[in-house]
Image (cartoon, rainbow, N blue to C red; front, side, top):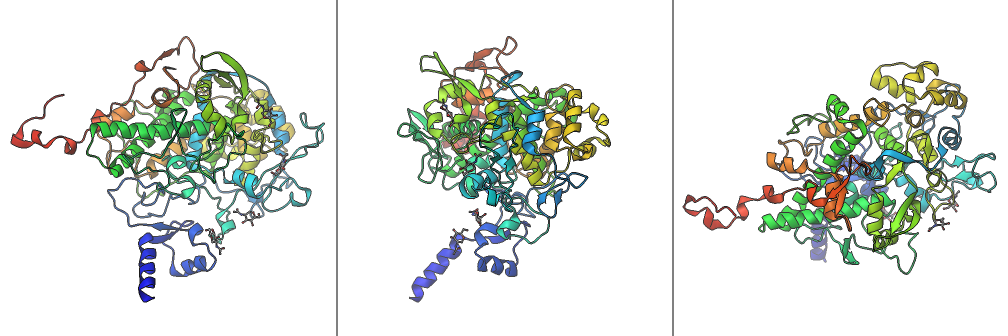
Length: 628
Ligand SMILES: *[C@@H]1O[C@H](CO)[C@@H](O)[C@H](O)[C@H]1NC(C)=O
Ligand SMILES: *[C@@H]1O[C@H](CO)[C@@H](O)[C@H](O)[C@H]1NC(C)=O
Ligand SMILES: *[C@@H]1O[C@H](CO)[C@@H](O)[C@H](O)[C@H]1NC(C)=O
Ligand SMILES: *[C@@H]1O[C@H](CO)[C@@H](O)[C@H](O)[C@H]1NC(C)=O
């Protein structure tokens, strides 16, 4: 009897060998707090187990030990920072207009500011919004959508509309699309807070995020905070995959949610990854395959490396690849090289740089996770589908692929090719599916941009002009003064919608903005993106461009990682991809023609060759190793 309980106790102790930290404060949890959590069954939710940090280890998938002095900060479920203080009414209600009245309805603002039209972007292809949304998933959280679909499903029922959990989008009688239908409401839930879970009693609502604070592929290596154990094969560093039609995919599983799969043909549904939007699914599949591709290449040059070494090195390269693609290629596509050099995001030398400051807490801002939704404007609603012989078959409504991994897996070539078509133009309109049926199959009606606007109010994001002031020092006191930032034809519309210029929502300001000089996004959006870049590089000890981090790249390795591009990624892991445009975020044109994949730069893994794996005989007698 005694023996059994001793064994049990030591097993239990062995599984949690670290110190429990409070997820909300990021500090070690006091005894008193822990007993409160234990009593209320909150330990698993509000506390995080931090095994002792080793300053020389690789970055951990759960974000612990990134900051050695505050190893509990920046982890899964840790709070989000704000650029400007939260702006709520009465605690956690949406802010009011200056006059004290309600702000204009989100759907009404969307309808007046953004029409519905089919239109093609003059420069960009689907990878611009697609990759942006994938990277959002690395640090952001769609738990409010999960909540709306799986749990709090009743926000459009009359008796629940005013529930604290609900913030439905009201559709007016004279709605241009739904006036002849019974739809008068679209579902929306308030984001969950650390307060909702009982993890803090602080006054200011702290919205949760289900990802680490770092750009580290959370959506691949630490989905739902489950850690890397569930996704690893433990063979040669690789992630678990299953073959379908001879191609590797993340494995299926019993708890995966793909309500739009059409049985019996469509069976793919990822157990350990998100099964949401098409672009997110594509990039998950591509980066999972890319991880395994990197493992194969590393194993080739380093046959003596074990699973652990291969896994962590491949993850590090895969993460650096995405960050290079995002903060250099994607940002450059949007803002232009000159602007990025001026902002410090790009350098002419392109060498190492260490901006890490251990006194900075790991940070990602709620404004950043919010304004990324501006790229919804670029989302197209149709894709041309081709058969195996390359013949055009039909225009497929892209939103119908949501929650439908089975369809995506069966049509990878078509969907991959579809990403090279022009995306929706930023011309004051949006795709009509985006605006009216954003989640077909699971919601009767959903206006995604209106939902975005509403979310900003739920997040307590400050008004538009406050951000203009924060980033430019310009104080805007009247609608007229908006002219420097807002397109002329919008000023009147905004004046009609809002009582005071200080009432305008951040997202609406961005919808109506002029584009920045030398770039193709609003200037204010660029400031917020660049702010996110700076916070990332300066608060992430494992940032890939720094040569002082543990397991840092050598100069030669960094040079290889700098070759990362979306075209390189698709040439490596894309289905049926033999050629790509030189610039993979730009549409195909005379200036940007398709070229053979053999002309797209690829990482040379030889620079990872480890002397320890070389046959011993070369080192005897002090002879130089043979050149192969
Ligand atoms: C305690 O919380 C966990 C989730 O953290 C849940 O799965 C479990 O059912 C809860 N137990 C009780 C007794 O409420
Ligand atoms: C589901 O919603 C109810 C009511 O809003 C809430 O009490 C419950 O905690 C929620 N469950 C989860 C898992 O979020
Ligand atoms: C797309 O989804 C809508 C709504 O569920 C449905 O009416 C339509 O038939 C679907 N179209 C295709 C081509 O699957
Ligand atoms: C709101 O959600 C409920 C439950 O999922 C659903 O039945 C209803 O159709 C949704 N409303 C709309 C407008 O989509």
